[in-house]
Length: 134
Length: 134
DNA sequence: GCGCTTTTATCGCATTGACG
DNA sequence: CGTCAATGCGATAAAAGCGC
Ligand SMILES: [Zn+2]
Ligand SMILES: [Zn+2]
Ligand SMILES: [Zn+2]
Ligand SMILES: [Zn+2]
Image (cartoon, rainbow over all chains, first blue to last red; front, side, top):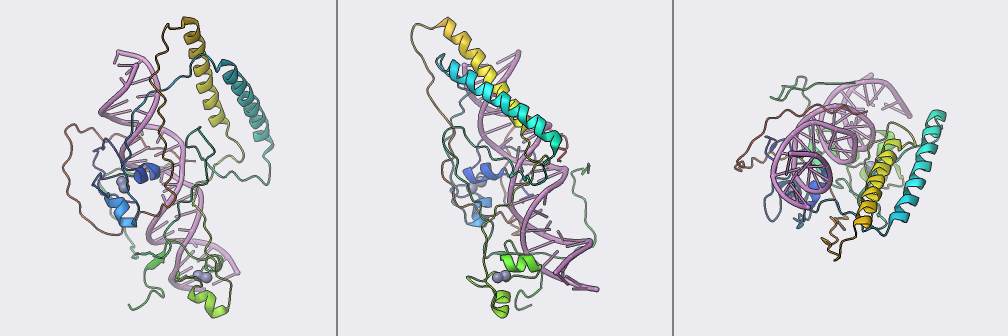
């Protein structure tokens, strides 16, 4: 990770890449440091902070149906949870926007670049307190 | 010293063979050196590292949330419908669409780049509670 | 070939500025 | 002033790869 700009300062707008990766964006233009490091196309989208947009009173039926369906799904999921199916691997969270079909985004890791690491028997504690749970 | 045989250089992505054998992959395309040496079919799979869900095939929480959201929407829609404003004044459809961003590589903090940026007025206390992962 | 350490990336959720 | 959405920390799962 970056581990440098984390001083409690939050930028008003992060670039698309950093937003997706949920990492700190330094905000430098035209390419932020994280993006430059990886040679990624940094872009600052013009985000219009729109509050929750409620649908007009036309899709009530649709919504009701959706709820019904979801309720059913949840019910089934609850039941399924108890059973604990053997071969069932959950891919993981993948939520973007309920607009269209979401393509499988391939956040290809580094192909070719390497990073140098060093053996370190002892580690120094940063100023941040580290509580290890679980 | 000269190469990356085993000197603190770790690739972000190793080929399937090397990964399976747990040996160092040099990362050369299309066939890495280890694979070439043994005449093995080198292949770099495009796999995105994803966090696994602790509960297999169970999105109960997500579903519940969705239901809640939908319920709220429906409720509001009902109320709005009853009100029925004289003129259809809508804020306008505005969604945050990341759209593309097909190529996303990694972020390497290895480069010790000291960036000097001034902080904005208004700091807050770093009191973020530790998030407990599953 | 594999146990286990080192290192990195992903993502749950705390925080907070902005909206209405 | 109540909420929502955007930012980003930090926990921790996953991957690379050493050494036996
Ligand atoms: Zn950025
Ligand atoms: Zn960027
Ligand atoms: Zn290889
Ligand atoms: Zn190979």
